[in-house]
Length: 182
Image 1 (tube, rainbow, N blue to C red):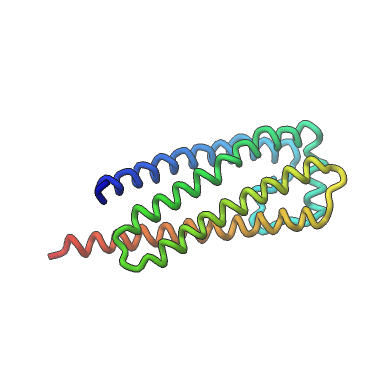
Image 2 (cartoon, rainbow, N blue to C red):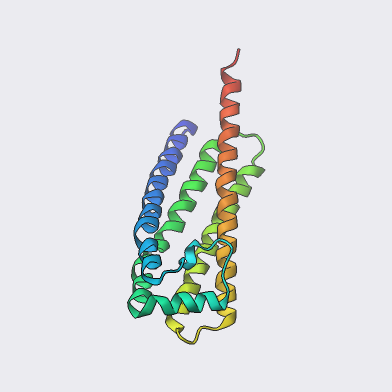
């Protein structure tokens, strides 16, 4: 496969997974997470980038009630199982696509590692939320602490991975402009 064909495939994957990931994100923000907040009157775990304590977790879980907790598991967690994979695929493909022309591949490898790390912590967060819901009303403080830590790390790594993807894209633009100049 030539570099040009490979580049086209990577670009297609970046755009396709980005559109799927963005669609899932919009569905979560506007439907499932909005419903969870409306039912409980509290911000869902997924939307607390600075974490939460055991009292906040218990308050949310109590306010959700049986139906709200079931909704969290069946709708939000279901969507949030697809979203990290799509976001990571979009970020990694975009970084690889734009990073092809970069002579220093360290930034590309770092961006890939951050993207994968963000997804892993998102999945750990999801497992923690599931465990908290299943164990309700006997939620352990270490479980809440571990899940909250995963939420914080997911949020931080996602932010840095997206910023790094933008930086690689900016670098690609600068390299492209340099190629066009006489």
